[in-house]
Image (cartoon, rainbow, N blue to C red):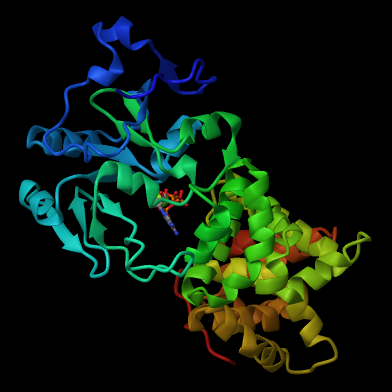
Length: 434
Ligand code: ATP
Ligand code: MG
């Protein structure tokens, strides 16, 4: 027998709570077991009767679930999409987890393909570019394969729904939604944390952060982007484990830094990274500036306003290029590196040399950053000349706008240049170094 849901599930913005008996006159725990149900030795989940509004869930995702279930498999919506739906946000995408192994999933959907070597997943493809990811339940490698707290290198063992929930990082990311039964399955106390709006790891945060230090940045991302609190133990573990980030795969760290800035809450996210000392580890150049952001005209104060600019553009529905995000994050430090230098492009190039490697900034972004910072003075003079035909010009306009605003100066000239750019011919010259 599963435990009864705790009384009161809070006010979920888009969810309707119903008592199970109102709906079908039988308790949730009596829901007929599906053919390959979780191993009987696993505890049953708490079940919450939640009707998520249909308009929020993609109809193609429903079709996939229906078909998998019809063929005797378990299938649930999982991860970020369930969390976002419960928090009243439209998910970016929908992920499904199932008891069916990749070959079975593949055989059920003609328009599908198996991808990935480390994790074999199935992408079910639809018209346009839409694809839905279907992953077979996985478990964390057994302790014999893994020293406690050691980084996880392989994560490709199939498992049960219970095990799949437990291998996830945060309780709010480990909720499973059964579309057909309108139930949330919760093995980890995630519903309560959604209601309390808190980021909490599944099990000991110190162990979970040592297993995968990128989780530490993910905690900051969710707290920042979704305006959630960090559980005090998680907060402490972020502070005490931050040095482990040096061992994390650099491209993954770079991607998470970009995600901190892309989610519409760049300022808050970077603030948390700074406050927890994570920025000292990843970007000591920046944390130094921020410690001195005491007066309005200081580079640190300008950096906060540049992050505000990123958030405002996100609110307006604009997606800034990754090169622009990197440039804005490092703009003040790059400007400092250019001080007194005649050749700004070389000065920035030199400054970026170590950083590019340390942060796995792509060559494309690094080249773009160099050109943007070198071209800024010319653009800000209002006479961009040939620059206005270069491919990186729109990015230059973004950065120049943020720079001006952060200095409390007018952007009239830049607005005019942007209008001219949009009205002008589309042919652009490839970027060159003059
Ligand atoms: P976003 O909205 O940024 O995509 P997300 O929660 O969907 O957030 P993904 O990176 O898409 O994040 O991952 C999907 C799910 O996979 C997560 O919700 C989580 O359950 C699990 N997951 C992702 N990364 C990790 C990790 N490093 N450790 C454990 N579980 C993870
Ligand atoms: Mg996701």
